[in-house]
Image (cartoon, rainbow, N blue to C red; front, top):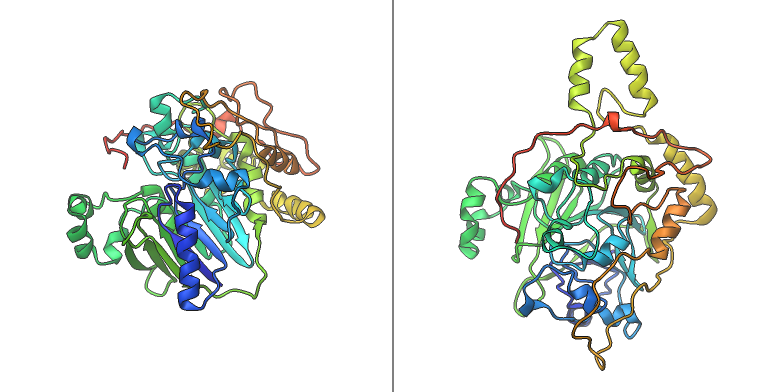
Length: 438
C-alpha cells in the first residue's frame, strides 16, 4: 500500500492533490491514501474562518470549501487530524471522527480507524500543560482564549488512546513527541531552526503526552508536523524491542519537504476507511466520564494503587478490590476492562458493517460570487454523522452540553457498561507553564 504523508495542509488541498498526481505520473505509481498531520483547516465558509486561530493576514478561504460543497471531489481517500490552526467549531461537531467532506475523514480529537488491514491512530491538537487536565469546556462562539485552548490536548483523550492494546501500524500527532530529537540528526535541525536549540538541549521541544503514547503504543510508523521542517528519526524501544520510524514534514509551500510517499506492507486492496472495533469499545467505555467543564479531570489511579499497597492482606483490601472490579478499573495495571463492551460492539458491527456513517452538510459552503464581510458567529450544530454514531453505540449526545451535571450519561443498551462516578476522578495539582503556542 502506498501512503502519501503530508505535514501541515493549511487548507491547500488543490495544491497537495495536484502534487500527488504529478508524483504518480513521474514515478509510475498509484497512491492509495493521503494522511495529513494537522493544520488541515477544514474551513467551509466565512463563519468557520473566524474560528481559526490565525493572524488576520493569514485568514483566507483556500480550497477545502470546494470539496465540502461538492464542487470538487477528493481524488484520494484522505485522513487528517487537527492541529493548532483549525476551524474548531466544525471539528467539534465531529469530535468522535467522521467525514469532513466526501472522501475526507477527520480522525477525531483522538481516534483509531482501519484502512484495509492497516490500523491508523491519531491525536489532534498540541500539548499545553496548563490545559491538559481540563475538560472540553469550549463551545462556539469562541472567546479569543477559547479559540486557543480548544485545540489543546486533553488527558481524557490521551487516556483513551493509552487503552489501545492491539498493535497500531501508524500513529499521527500534530506536534512531535518530546525527546524525539535525540533519535535523529538534531545538530542539522538546529542549524535549520536555530530558535529550537535551547528546547532541544533542555529536552522541552515537543509534546509530553505524545511521548507517553509513543512509549506505550510503539507503532512502526509515527508522523507529525507543526514545526514546519522535515525531521526523520528511528526509535528503538528497548534493547530487543520494536522500532518506530518517525517522520515530521513541512507545510505546503514551494520547495519545501511537505510530502512523502511510503510503501507500507498490507493486504491487497481495494481499501476503504472503516471503524475499529477496539476503539469503539474504548469510546463506549469512557463516555460516562466525558469531561465537559473546566474542572480538572484525572482517573483516580495512583492514589488508589498506593492505598492498596498499604492495606494489602487485609479485609479492607479485599473490599477495595471488589469495588474496583465492579467499576471496571484494574487495580494492577491501571486500565479499564473493555471486554464486555468489545463483545457488544462486535455484535453491532457484524449486524451493520464497519463503514462510517455518510457525510452530511451542516453549514452553507462559501460562495465566491457572494462573499460575506460580516458573517454570523458560529454556533454549535449537531452533525447527523455524530448523532448516528452515538445512536449506534447507544450513547447520549453530550457535545452541546456546557455543564456535565444533570446529563444522562448512561444510555440503555443490551450490554450496558459500568458507569464511572465522580468518586473515580482525582483533581490533580499541576504547575502551569508559560510556553507559547506555535
